[in-house]
Image (cartoon, rainbow, N blue to C red; front, side):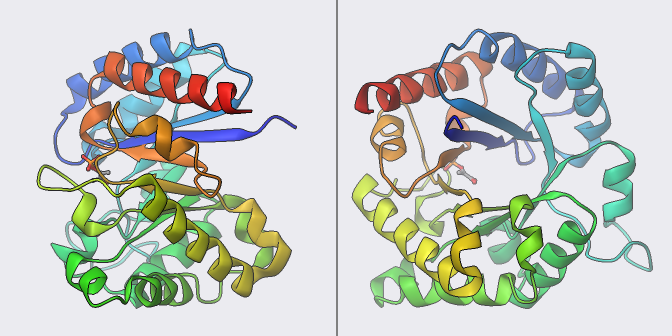
Length: 266
Ligand code: PEP
């Protein structure tokens, strides 16, 4: 079986519907020109208001490399008195295949807790979504030397009661909070690899051999200068990119060069 390499982006609150549709059309056209011995999994997570058209543009595109469309968040309940929120059933109705849970901005701006993320993870998996759980330590936690404990806590609570047969739908993104966004300092590839190892070890403790089904992606100021080193790390299965991916041609260039580096290293 070909090794899968994951590349994805979260568009946060930056692109409206029209921009998202144009971006996806160009991304799909360019990404489908990539030649690589690896099996590439490409995903894009637009804002809620773009999801319907995003799904449609990809479905109509009918290209071999299908971009998976994800939602940035969801409520854990199917329906109810949750004004302003979006339910898993609403996402399913649109043909959304992936849901991101616990992005650092959800945790730190919107104060979501590990147990809330757990409720969302369980609901997303129950509804058959590919579920991307984001975890990562803050700078303060890193400075206290408790990064490993934080990651293990986020995994153990966030994945509480997840069953082994659901693991083929589970992805993890390691995104250190201090590495994300305009003020972020990218993690060194060595540091990122060490933390991915901690994550994989914890997943093994939780799920045994079946944990090898769970890809672990790195995110946080991934850019053309560090992408190759990051993707070459043995514990990193993919790159989750923000700013460097928001122009389709730049994103495809980053993906192509990372895949080339990986191919040369085999
Ligand atoms: C993110 O917000 O998840 C992210 C990885 O952003 P950036 O690459 O811009 O740091």
